[in-house]
Length: 269
Ligand code: THG
Image (cartoon, rainbow, N blue to C red; front, side, top):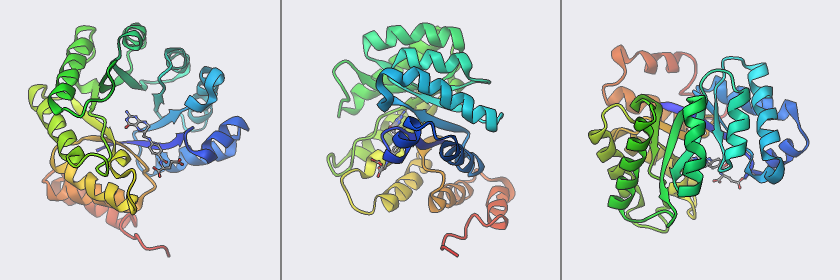
């Protein structure tokens, strides 16, 4: 499971405040804890900075990589200028979050993918918005994978995101997303699937529990990357345990390693 740590997101109030105040200590603490908890990428979303988005994105990326040089960033923006500014200063291969089939945005982003060669999240959405129809979202996934491979992106560098509806709004939200991901993986062996898992629980109580259980269901269906809070210990314990039970953990090594390092001590001590 490739974990993308979601916490540095400007839709969260403490993060907006820290970004506005250029609070290095707060943001570095968020980055370091997520990195140490096993994130492969640290998502950075600066959308709420509006006109200053590109400038703030550059500042955050340089801040994090200055402190944790091996850390990689998922540059999370709808703004091509902020994406490009981020790619320019990012060291190593970034994860671009994201491209979709909205024509104007797509056409602005393709040259960036060709030039900076990031790994890419592809969202199954177009100018008509998110469709509830599984076939439509599946077909958008196919179009995005074909488009990206045409410009030289390897399947291993593509993460298709079926965009999850809240189950409170759409009874089949979970099933539909899992079905789309399964079909795309079958048609394009080697492609990755990813989702912002917590969308599923929007509008319901006990969101953490819902997210944790959905993770296990999704792992059984082949989800191999997720944008989550890696500081949720039960979520991380579920990931490790589910992988062991699904035969993906030789000699139960990851399970035992997590056990020895206290990863299953979930109760506050
Ligand atoms: N797909 C892709 N990227 C994404 C998403 C996705 N990026 C943003 C988002 N969705 C995933 N990231 C977050 C980051 C923080 C929170 C949720 C998702 C979060 N939510 C709290 C909650 O849900 O209770 C509180 C929000 C708040 O403070 O207002 O913290 O789907 N590719």
